[in-house]
Length: 59
Length: 432
Image (cartoon, helix red, strand yellow):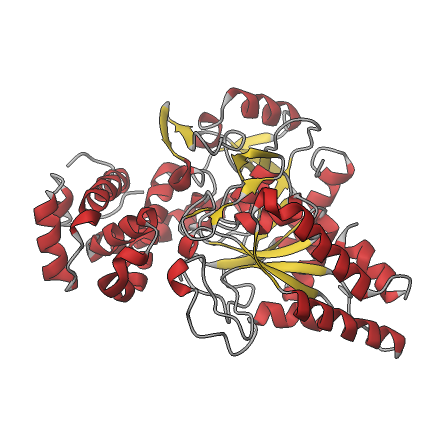
């Protein structure tokens, strides 16, 4: 079994906190409070690892 | 006493439901200070419901199969007249529910008596019941350890002997993990088998509700009252899941499960690790999008640990979510083929005993990772494809609990109950 390859390049390499804030404004109409950004970035890193796992290949 | 023992006495008029309810209320008042399983004690409602049961018995009416059985519900079931907090401090002032959740209505119709609402991880996003607003629920088997989550209050209330029956919800393991860590039984039914009306949602793709109890008979009785159906198919064909499930056990769990089930055929479920990752991604994305409106306006009122996970999930590209969904279709088809030759598959719930509260980590692939996010390592791949599971405690008096998953085909709960009753009768599983 193999998940189809998809364009989730935004997580590789992991975006900076400033980039995450911009993405949230553009894609979610959401101004992330600054104090949340380190935790959000850490969690995006975890999600990125899971993306690599289901993709079954290194990006 | 078990739920069915209580019901038998109340139905026979040998014990009043009011006296049972008062006993449960007193037990909570006496014991919950050390455990923190209960978020609200519903004393007036419980006594009124119990009084109605006693009146039915006195009038010669059938009071129901769970007559007088005191129970509690995870704090995400609607209880008429109360805000449904879903474990979130920001929802303490939410509008009160206008009606009971459907599951509560069914238990009420069976004569059970609602006594308490129970603690959980905020918005059910966690495996620890470490809650910034309502506190940490402690494991009754060792109060220095986690009860597990997210239905930790539901499991701890039963394990502490405060209530014989509770309800929880399971999205990725939130019934099975706390049942295993607290040493009791829990049922995650087949996806969509039980009514979700009036249950605060987390991830529609995986959300289920189910009961906790100290015996298989009590668990089965609750299952039937809640709407469970089906008959055993005969002598079940049983195998043990190996491979990834074995590799994630610590030495103690591996030795115990290996010795108890040494004679069973081992079968491998391929791609389990990818299934777990796909479940993780779908959960993050669905959960994040569900809470995005509140995140936009009240982000700082969330528990920070929940909030940052939800925001990251909302940011996940839709394409990644769809890839996880597509993988689920393939994985489900592959997993269901195992049931051509087997009726019950056995796997551990958690690879080690409950983590300490002051050291809330588990070991995954040799790495220490936060328990809150990772205790569901072995439960997530199963709920990912909607299979029914009974979490059963391995019987080992004097030691911290370890639990196993008894996994069935969709709609196969009756086979699971029949097999679990046999394990309990042999002394392999059971609460101690």
